[in-house]
View 1 (cartoon, rainbow, N blue to C red):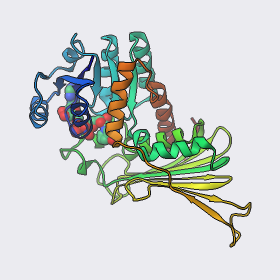
View 2 (cartoon, rainbow, N blue to C red; view 1 turned 180 degrees about the horizontal axis):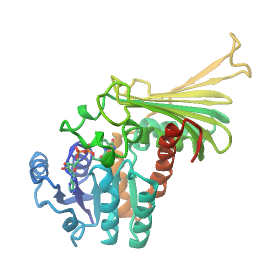
View 3 (cartoon, rainbow, N blue to C red; view 1 turned 90 degrees about the vertical axis):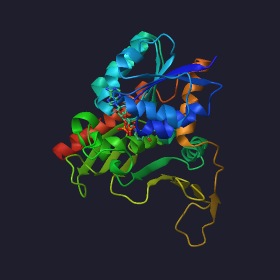
Length: 344
Ligand SMILES: NC(=O)c1ccc[n+]([C@@H]2O[C@H](COP(=O)([O-])OP(=O)(O)OC[C@H]3O[C@@H](n4cnc5c(N)ncnc54)[C@H](O)[C@@H]3O)[C@@H](O)[C@H]2O)c1
């Protein structure tokens, strides 16, 4: 039977990610209710996607109580994720919550507890893990081709939320609603990706988080150094002042390195040094370009969540994973405030 879905928040991510990928999965998923505090936004999406048999609801508290839905997509501003997830879980609905899981580690704990108590799945929509480019890269890392990983870097950047969503005094720039600026908004993407690539805990961070270009009260650029549990190093940068859009990583191992760059012709490149001294001019290099699987990142994420509900399989980007990434983000903001390394 198809999973019956309710969506709370009918803004950009619903329009770009959730709705198209539920509509194109109609054998497995059926949208039952669209909820937005601004009713015309829900109506506009209903019309745009020519949905039938879908109710419009202004009050999210009513939406989560409906008996005819199995799962809720929480696509609202970050500060609302906790309250909505807790209520959905209490009403026995599986939850796909947008990144970041929420705005504090304490709130994430509450969400995880509620999902457990309700006996439902809580998945965090950490899109980068569902990009086929990064899934191909993860396979390379798991294969051991690069040897022991010493250093891992990532960068994500775009021009900022004003080019994505609507409204001038936007919630993305209101710390109470967003939890911060670029560091939480897209730092969460690249931090989570690097954590997943590394497959080990980040123990300490040192961060420089700044507002360089935008006339806003939250940060628009950040650099964070990581120390992993085994002593190896990591580094991320995130930026709301980058044009064009960029998501890149470099992983250095004892046998070679791997570069990923989303949106390029050969998005994963692995270079292996065939002799011990990689700087030898006669060193033979082997170049590998792994095959990239199908699907767009949002499509893969939405379909994966629906499949998890149908197959009763716990999503691998669980609330606990979202919480671990949130711990790093929170420690990064703390490090920036105190100007020193902070334990995660
Ligand atoms: N995974 C990704 O790549 C990605 C990209 C962009 C945004 N996001 C995340 O998606 C979430 C939503 O972002 P967005 O860009 O769609 O924002 P948005 O402002 O475009 O949409 C948010 C919607 O929530 C509605 N809303 C606000 N309060 C509400 C309430 N109390 N009840 C019901 N509806 C309410 C608003 O009216 C609006 O329509 C955020 O958590 C954001 O971080 C994820």
